[in-house]
Length: 173
Picture 1 (cartoon, helix red, strand yellow):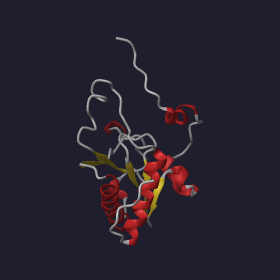
Picture 2 (tube, helix red, strand yellow):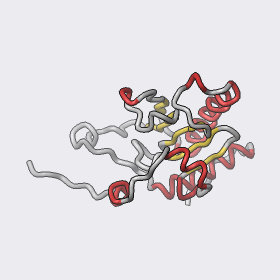
Picture 3 (cartoon, one colour):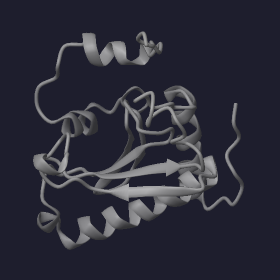
Picture 4 (cartoon, one colour):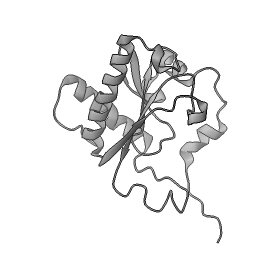
C-alpha cells in the first residue's frame, strides 16, 4: 500500500517559524494580540486560549496568568477562578458547538504528556459521536472540521454572550 497525503497548510507555521523562547503562555498573555494569539477570554487571573494544533475543533485551554506548573501553588483566588473558568468554557463550547460530550483534563509534568510542563493548563476538547471514526485509528490522522478563524470567531462571540448573560446561541458566519 502506498503512502497517503493530507494537505494541512496551517501546520507550516509550526514547522517553518522560528521557535520562540520562554513560556508560550506567558508570551501570549503579555502581547495583547488576542485574535492573533487565539485568546478567546481574559479573566482577572486566568485566560482561555485555543489550541493552535487542536485534537478537535474547539480545543481550548484554560491557563493561569501567573507562571506555575503546579496545581497546589495556585492561590485560593486563582484556583477558584481557574475552575470557574473551566465551567464557563464548558458552557460556551456546549452552546456554540453542540458537542455530544467533552474531554477535560491536565497533564502535570513532562512524563504525563505535558507539552508545556512549566505552565499549568486545563484542556477542554469537544467530542462528537463518530468523530474518531476510522481516520485516527487506521489512517493515523485527525480530522478537524472547523478552521481556526471560524472557531475563534464562534468562541469569542460565545464567551462575550455568556459573560453578558445572553441565552441565545452565537451566530455562525
